[in-house]
Image (cartoon, rainbow, N blue to C red; front, side, top):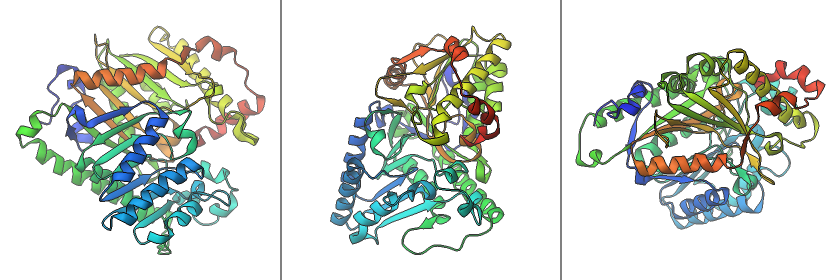
Length: 455
C-alpha cells in the first residue's frame, strides 16, 4: 500500500492523506444502514454484546421507552462483564433540559454501576459565566452544541447524524454507516475522551473551568495532537506492505470540525473534495437544514466542475414544523435561504449544472446529511462524506462535529452506497420553481439575516 490512490478515478483526492489519518479496511467491514429501526436494532445488538467498551457521543439521549430499553440492556451488560465500561458524552444544555432529561434517566439506570458508567455533559465556552444564566432554556442551545454522533462498541464505529432518541429510531430519516476497525474505534474514543475532560462530569469530579481563551487554546492543542499522532501511526502502517493490507479496498479518513476550537478539518476536506473533482463528475449532497456557508456556496458556483444535486428537507419534513414560538419559523427560514441560493444559481448561469430537491414523505422528517461522489462516466459513487455536519453555518462555526470521508474501489460497496443514496431520493422532487413561490412570514424575513449563523 502507499500514500496515494492508485485508481485514476480517485487520484484527484490524494491530498486527503496530508489532511487526516487514513484507516484502510475491507469493504466487508462497512455496513450501510438505511432504516431508522435497523439503526436502533444495530445499536441494541452491539451494546448488548460489547465486551470492553461502549462509547457514545450524541446531542442527547431521549427519555422514552426505546431509549430506556437501549440504556438498560447496555447497563445489564456492564453488570455482567467487569471489564466493560460505558462512557457517554452529551451536550449540557440539551441533556439537562426539563425535569426529566438525559441526565436524570442516566442516573436512574446506572446507579448500581456508577463506577463504570460515566456521563459527561459538554458546555460550549461561549456560555461560561453570566451567559449561561442570561439565556433561557432552549434558546441557550443556539450558542453552540456537542453535536457529534458516534456510537462505538469494541471495534465497531457507527457514524451518523442521528441522535439517541425515539424519533430517530422510527420515522426520522438519517444516514448510518458502521465500520468495524479497532484502530478507528480507538481514534474516535480518544476524541470523545478529550472532549470529556473539559465537560461537566456527572460523578461529582468536575474540574474548575478555565477562561474561554485558555480552554480554546488547550483544546486546539490536544485535538490536533490526537490527529497528528494517528496520522503518523497510520502513515507508518501504510508504508509497510502486508498480505492483509493487499486485500483492503476502502479508505476511511476521520474528519473533525470544532470551529469553537479552531479545528477545521471537515471544512477543509469538504472544500477540497468539491473543488478537486473533474469535469463530468457528479455530486449528490444532502442536508436536513439547508444553510450553506458562503465559502461552500462560492465553491459550488465558481470552483466546482461537477454537476450537483442538493437534497434538503421540505418544510413538512423539517423537525421544527409546528413547533411553538420562534422555532416554528425555522422551516420557513431554511426555505428562504434555499430560495436566495437558487437565485444565485440563476444569476451565475448555473441552472443547467445545479439541481435543488426536497424530501417529503408522509409522517416522516428528514435529517440525512453528507455527499456522494460519482466519477465521470460512473453510475455508482466511489466516495462519500458521512457524519453529523450539515454543510451549514452552525456546523462550521459553533458545534462540535464528527465526519468521515470514505473512498472505495469495491464494486460491492459502491453499489451499496448508490442504493443508500437512491433510497433517500425516492421521496424527493425538484423544487426550484416552488421555492420562488413559497410564502415566507415577514418576521422570518426580518430576522433570518441576523441569526443565520445560529441555525
